Amino acid sequence: MKKNEKIAIFLLVFAAIIITASAFEFIDQWKDDVIIGGPGVTRIAQLSDYFPELKGEYCDTAIYFLESDEPGGTVFVLGGTHPNEPSSMLSAVLLIENAVVTRGRIIVIPQANLSGYSHNDPQEASPRKLHFKTASGVRVFRYGSRATNPIHQWPDPDIYINQFGQSLSGSETRNLNRGYPGDPKGNYTERICYGIMEVIRKEAADLSVDLHEASPEYPVINAIVAHERAIDLASIAVLDLQMEDLNYNLEISPPSFRGLTHREWGDYSDTMAILMETANASQGRIRGRTDEALALTGKDKMYVKAAELGRLYVPYDENGHPIEERVGRHLAALNVLIVNMGMLFPEKTVEYYGIPSYGELMEQGYANYLLAAQ
Amino acid sequence: MLIITFIYRLIILFFTVLVVRDMFKEKDIWNQLTSVLVIIPFVLRLFMVK
Image (tube, rainbow over all chains, first blue to last red; front, side, top):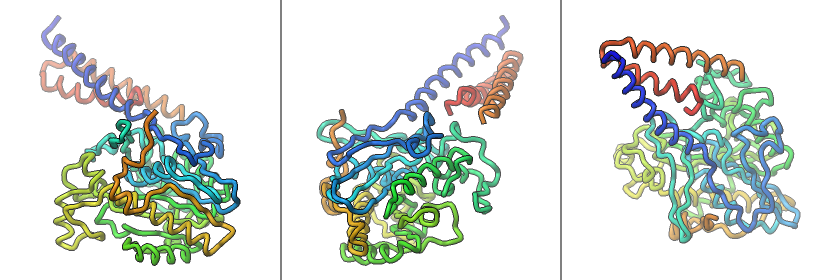
């Protein structure tokens, strides 16, 4: 055997070791997160129960029902549209594991784009997992990508032309919050969108809330974006939240910006559609070191500097924006929306207990409200 | 979509075999190392792991 052939064999063995090690890491990201149904969960369905074509697909995500015997309104909460925005899923998980509904019902999807949780964005140095130390052990949740996994949907077109003829960048074809109202014959992501629309329509959700995060330099942040049918409710909620020292910007859903939840949920169903944003440095463009700590604490000296230069849309200091604050904001705003919906439309009242206040979350920490892993 | 994916994977397999074959013919170790860098993502894609 020639020398170069021996080297080639050695290099192939070397490649096999790297391929095997990295494959284990990638495949580990496919494993489901443990989300425990709390005392208020009455049943768990799947997205494919509403759109059977998703049966057997990786994206067939779980839907948690928190129902009471007392008639009232229906609130739909969507977490995990973008799996790199952790307060979105974590707020939904806290609802599932703690809330008990005494009037009406709350329907929660914690991981809307389940496929997005099965991978990371390349070249972003994102953490793979988020860990929370509880009294009974460590709970782990995945930190995913903004978009659907390319192993589930490919190839990206050069330009994504959405269902309304609008041109977007090619990768937006895998962005769940660009594909509404969905298309039963469309691409993988558009079919997930269609399934979620079917949940809203078939369950006749009165209020539907999509939870998000945004980078601190993004103008729409610490914000509530409302469809025109929900603008009265959102306006009252913003005023109420100010009374609790939680400042929110109120935005009306732009009628010409198509494919997003706050627009299409309202246009293609009878629900009052709302999207909410908190500040997440780990998805920002000017962040420094990117790791789990950044995702959970938001502490980043580059953002402190940017705030000093007046370049951000949220206050930013060395305390960052911890996950407790971001989850607390989402849950406080959701509560205010639900309470005010009951005042505006008494027949749509939803009442529940078990959810910590913003102050309690800040004091006790997020992990304190997670249930014991089985 | 399934047919496109199948053809896509056949193309990846074809190029992976070509690169491996070239690696055994190549005399320059740096070019052989470059081949390894190509093979790793190709194999992960071939098995639709990444």
